[in-house]
Image 1 (cartoon, rainbow, N blue to C red):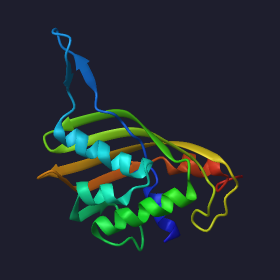
Image 2 (cartoon, helix red, strand yellow; image 1 turned 180 degrees about the vertical axis):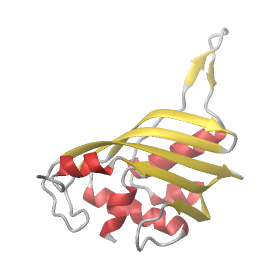
Image 3 (cartoon, helix red, strand yellow; image 1 turned 90 degrees about the vertical axis):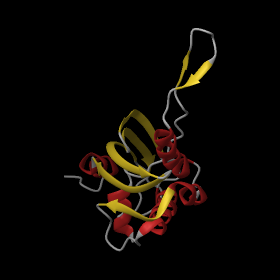
Length: 167
């Protein structure tokens, strides 16, 4: 269960990224964020607000996590478990979405993840240290739901910052 935190932190971090807007020539605001991008943005909002109910709204029941953490339950229940664990270990966890791009039904998010470790991570006790890492997630959306997510995070940097990999 503790392994889940290390492998999914970057992938599930919390950020409220508002829909991007642009001003048209009439002075009205026009949303330029696609429906798929809005759904994916809600993923990060769920973690930011520590609200697993949002995950029920946006994830397919049989959502696939690539790669899953050891002992992670399948489907959306696994995502909800990670949300609770991350919120406990890093209560100030934040994600800043740096880029959000779309190609067909896949949405790519490059983000900066930060948080202060206040609880155990991989059986390593908290040292009250802050980490900031980079992550890239690819979410596939079908019929208004995220059906699978691929993710990669810069855990080597995070573990060094948290004192887990000290010399």
